[in-house]
Image: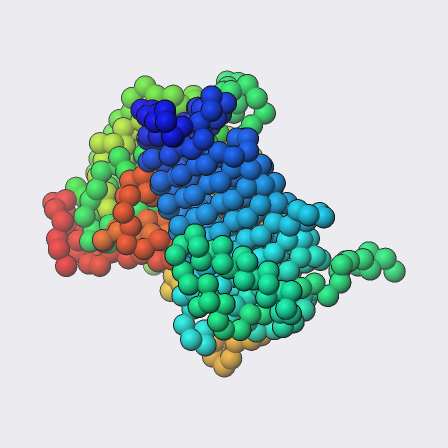
Length: 254
Length: 378
């Protein structure tokens, strides 16, 4: 069933039982015909939502979208009222993903631009091989905590993990944080022990420029989910960054 | 042999989503539920498989025969059936035998499938448990008969599997007609070995079953170790070793299931080094004694047996697993969407850490062994 509100250019689709290829084809057609916003109801596992839509379009997703939502995405804003599965934001280039829930593994895999905000916890290998080039600096902000291999092989961009939901004095459980990391930065609110960090990772206190960046990203995060920015900025942030730009430069050279 | 091209790639492009899919649901009250939810859930992950294998393990299935070993046997020839039936008659008291009901469905080259309800002849058990006796006979049949495979041998449970998408395999075996308190399901994307009926998941011995997404690169070591204990791998699929490893560890060596999981998915040495005292001794000992049963490579598995369902991944979780609860029901799935499809509202949904098992248990054993098929409440 398709409902189109002509004045607002809003399209509503009941996606129950609709195969992902058909659904994505419908989205492409709608956007080509001038639709500015699509509301997707009853989403259950359809993959690649938002993947190949141009520019300014907005998607509002109700349900549990399938893997690789926003893969290669180049501009749209996708808001999910539900949880994300694996591989979302894979190689995303521009746009915004806002998840009112949690996310699975490999969120923002090789992401090269745009922003992802996840209200709750995230899975393994979040931000794996994120990268950046000149003005394109991708960012992921996670409200809860992350599972192991956060920022693995990270080559650029910004990861912020706010640790909401951890008890007073409880540390993040992720280990292998930043394993193979050689550029970019992770800001972690809360504590970890040294053995939880990859060998390539150093710990610093955020400086004034870092706080400015944090205020901006955390402010945007708070705005999406209705939190108070100042509360989220309270507490200790660790700045994790690679000690070397070429951690394996000498591995194969004698 | 039938071309698999259209199954692999019906859209004529090069898009192949390579993965397997797993699903499991356990009603911890022991209440027997129909197959529709499990079939719909695994079908929702259709694209993870490629039509080259699908299967189900179902517990609480044969309440009329709760104390008989239920053998499911695939035959590719009439002669194979005659031979194996003669073997069964000479080794067991065969209480009942019948062809498993099937219907026309989109499966490839189905064999003939029979089931038998058996008890070992008392006099045949010479200082041996009935379970051990059954394992030996299964190994004998599977290594000794070319045209026959025993693919299910537990009590009050059964495995149904074949070449096709899982929803088509369910259709073929009319699984919507069955009721059970525990269902596990698998859709296959074979990576290293050919697709054939015996090679589909679940793999089982006695009432242990395993469905698996991933690749066991330690298969050779695991298989050779298990051969020392009389387990012979005949199904040409790596997952087979897991079923036998669990039988060896849990049933014959009496390890609690959480420790079985710690053998298969052992803590890293670095983690063991940070443990203290008895805990450190325990995990060090487990790795030393059972090093040959460590599963290397990426995996998510759902292990099931009478009254229990366990989800487990490799130590660094290279394959997905989502767990959820709703009321008395535990769900395990490769993807959360499959769970939400059959239970939109959940009490709890989470992703377990690598190597940390999720264990669901029926609250009252009595609930599932009532011979009348009635559910007894704890």
